[in-house]
Amino acid sequence: MSSDTPTDLVASRRHQMFPVLNAAEIERLGRFGTVRRYSAGERLFTAGESGPGMFVVLDGVVAITQRNGLGQVVPIAKQDRGHFLAEVGQLSGRPALVDGQAESDVEALLIEPAALRALLIAEADLGERITRALILRRVALIESGASGAVLIARSDAPTLARLQNFLRRNGQPYHHLDPNTDHDAQVWTEQYQIGPFEVLAVCPTGAVLRNPADLELARCLGMVDTVDHTDLYDVAIVGAGPAGLATAVYAASEGLRVMVMDCRAHGGQAGASARIENYLGFPTGISGQALAGRAFVQAQKFGVEMLIPAQVVSLDCSRREAEGELGVLLADGRRIRARSVVMATGARYRRLDVDNLAAFEGRGVWYWASPIEARICRDQQVALVGGGNSAGQAAVFLAAHAAKVIMLVRGEGLSATMSKYLIERIEATPNIELKTHRAVTALHGDAEAGLQNITLQHRQTGELENHEIRHLFLFVGADPETECMTSCHAALDPAGFVLTGDQVRSASCKALRPGASLESSIPGVFAVGDVRSGSVKRVGGAIGEGAAVVPLLHAFLAGLG
Image 1 (cartoon, rainbow, N blue to C red):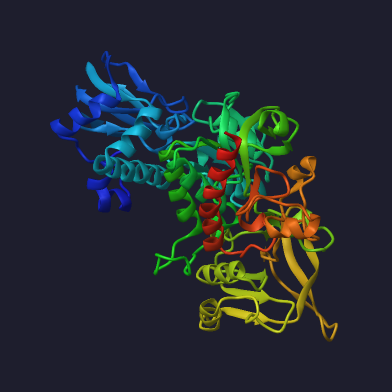
Image 2: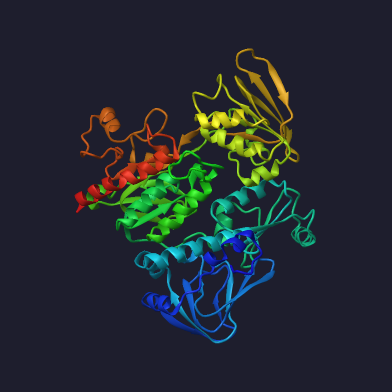
């Protein structure tokens, strides 16, 4: 990314995105890297290939260009002495998103990912400037849409919304082309004989995928780590929501070696929140995605290793007593070895007990409200089921885009389940209508048109009413993600949440170590955030538990010797 890209972000924060290092600063960076030389025309890094790290230009000129899978190349800038070439992906050696080619003979200082992380910590003032630039460059790349995957599909294709959400929540740039309005996209759909509701994904490497699953697209983009990871970690964290990321940041900053795994994206359910306004330190609010994105970068800065997406299928406790080792088994067959495990798996979205619900998921039924869904339902009437804070945040967000938002709750109102500030905002929003004592009993539509209308039933009178609704948002709670713990026979409460501390003592009369308040019935396995029985289902609570578990981890690891 570069200063010539015509975005508002670049125009307003150009000096932060592209600082130029002076001679003294370059000298300070010298101990973290090695000098490399490149001949004119030689590539320093290539879009879609693993990035070697951050380059600091010492002499010569490097031309930076954006390139997508369709072969479209956009010149960005020419960088000379004092410029550094990188974005947040280089903190962990992820694939480059742009091409960097020597326009003349070039001499550059290459700082590899591990050394770059050490630099950010050791050189606090320089590290702050560099980190800010890396983050802003990724944001600008996402805004530009000129790099990353190209998604070719009709705007109403259900698979498109799924892939867009997957890429957006993982901070990956992409570009969408609609064959109804773009000639090149029409040519591609004819060449590959793509149906009206199918998606063609073209990766920067030129690989073409038809209706890919999230993991398949992730592999194509180089997001999936295939290294065996046979080393023994101090802590393996399952789940990259607020609780998992907080644990990772605090544990790694205190010197523990940490691995984080998540099957979807960083941020968890909080990552789908349009605006969080009751989190300490953000008086004007912050989106869940922005909060999670900052924590994700912060964790990598302290050396946390990330496997996202990576599906955890079970825990392995067979070596716990003899060797002091726990195993986390992944769907691809890999086994992550760790001395302790923190379960921060959160919960999965609960579904309504309505016939044919699955047929409309992605075709009018949604479980989060992001800018992608907001764009799809612009100027339409939508319905939203739920009375918690997440539902309230979503309703207010959607009201700024939809013609009308109908909120449906089973009870008498919102006061028992929603924060007062959200209730007041909903009451002050003219295009939000609250319908109480209502339940969705039927969905109507077809595979081609998607959802068209819904049937509601008044829970007290039994009266039925039909509404023309093409977009239904569900925020009806969540069930804990604990299936992977059954292999070690973890103690759970009747709802399936993980019992910890005194709860385990009460349930099993088992004597635990003093202070192990967040430890499950499995020694060395801790639970934090929404997955833990009795936890406060708030972002602040999850982050607090993530911080609180770290001293307990230190105590446990010290006991292992």
